[in-house]
Amino acid sequence: MLLCIIPFHTLYAQLERERAVKEPEVELTFMAPRNINLYTVHQVSKGELHYSIMHTFGEVNTGPRNLWGIDQGANVRFSFEYGIGKNISLVLGRSSMDKVIDLGTRISTLKQKKNGGAPVSVSLIPVVGINSSDLSFLDEEYLFTDRLNYSLSLPIARKFTPNLSLQVSPILAHFNRVGPELSLSNPTENTYFSTAFSGRYKIKPRTALSFQYVPDLGIVEGVESNLAIGIDIETGGHVFQMFFTTSRALHEPYIIAAQNGNFFKREFRFGFNINRLFRVK
Image 1: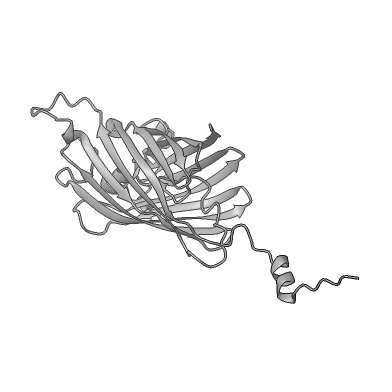
Image 2: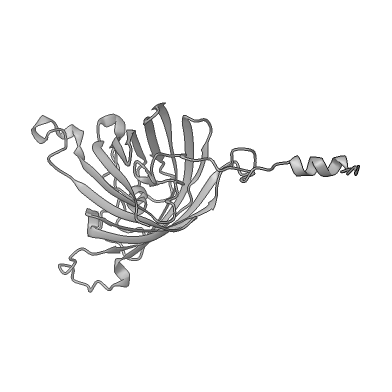
């Protein structure tokens, strides 16, 4: 009779198991790639297409004759974002305000982990915009380079609990040429900077309250702070966002550079976003 003896430490090694993902990533920090008007750290996956329609109306203090702003002052933006890799996507959008067409990319540089590791998620979002308005009424020629504007945002977010997520976003914007023909708060200033704060708090499994605050840092004369509050509703493949905001603008360069009203003087307007995610791969 043959007796086979296997060392104890060998048996122990064979029974040992390791997780396929040692540090799983935190998911759904935000419900959509946008939180009201600001980019979030929510990355579009490879092969996914995110389509959004964003809309703001006129100020509510215009009264019932204008249906509290619904009849006037509309600004519309639509955009497409496609994931070309695990941590990178391309964005193409168009806003009716100054008829700006923009092209950018979202790069996820860091993702929050559940079991220690990275405490926050970070994205880098460079964007270039082109003013496609008819500017032939101006005395001076408007070159192609004059029509360009640039922005760079760095969303940094943390999901503190299953319900609460907060984000801070330094934003830098530059307009190659400025003047009264653009919808800016200061027609003589080319460069703007601010640090935006935003967040959401889930009140139901598919519903969350949201906010954004883009303060005036006193760098550029005439710039005013932006404030917005809203509600997000997720219905399967759609995320509907309804909000009140002090700005007519719908994307970063104009959020920090365009005119803002005083929220407490009812100089705010109603807006909504419709987000839809498709799998096209």
